[in-house]
Image (cartoon, rainbow, N blue to C red):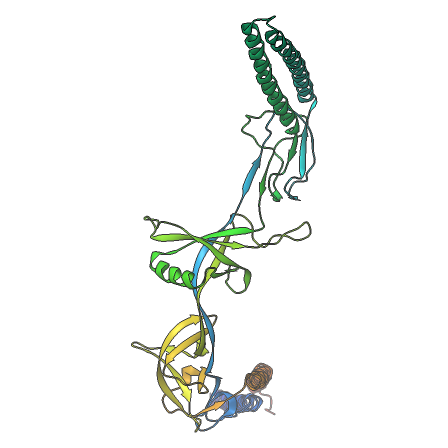
Length: 473
């Protein structure tokens, strides 16, 4: 009985000793894990660049709240008062080429889309039937001439007999009337002959105006008639060409006044985004009435639109285009860039840079705006500097540093590369070092777990030996 109690006591002691050893080993593993995590944190912190390298004021490395800005000088210049509208290109002449006689179309002598001149031969209709009509008319005229000559000779004879009292006056008068009849007949037949010749000439179709000819509507070999609705082709005059546009009726007085001082107001055409001029012409006419449906009045301008076989026309019929009608040319006006102007709730203002490199808010009165420039009628003097960039960080009395465009670009590039390298370094440090720290932490945990398992196995072996009355090592 005593031996059994002793044996159980030894077993309990061994188990308690194994538990104590196992707990101590777990504590050591936990401490090693914490050390590995601290090392990882320290490494990742060292791999990240320190903050505060940009200075107190943020971008640009300027201290003391100085704001970098770009400025523009107020200057005196010129500007045109322009009335803008949307116009339609309209040809001065559009001619539909049709046949004026009946006949078979023998050949076509133009190419589709070709630039043709007035009087140019375009097509040929079979002339034989009309040539025969001309010959017939010529025969009739020759017969009339012969009859007239014979009647005149008889008239001379009757007058001679009348003078000799050998003939009657009635016979002489009848012969004189016959002569006048033949003269009238000859005149009619000669007109018919000329008409036949004209009809024959119509078999040769020529261009009535200069311009660009369109697509052919009838092919050679077809019978065409003078009354057909179909056309051989359409010729559109491209040079010169006109543009018709509408302006509000409220601007009519302004335009009329300008037209009285300048008979040919300048009209400029612009492309779709109104960035570059396409053609410059002159105002040709103002319509005589206002459209009651739209409240606008139509104007027509004319443009040279030079064209030949090797160049294409700048303006094309029925093309929509932006129109600018110049009604006044302003000189010696105060101008600033449009980006310098700020608009408040009640007025407009600009930031003016003072000699002490501080800014002040200056209310201004504006005039026309055109092509990124604004006329200032009150509030600024020529030569003053106004802020164009960096306005969002300004306030009354703020200190600024004027930077040139080149300096600004180079500064931005330097800051960008610095920020990029810093971000890249932080990224590399954060990922690579953190990965290494996690790997170290995992390795330490695995090692501690293995060590604990080994001690636990040794404790089990000792307990088994104790049960078998073997000495514990």
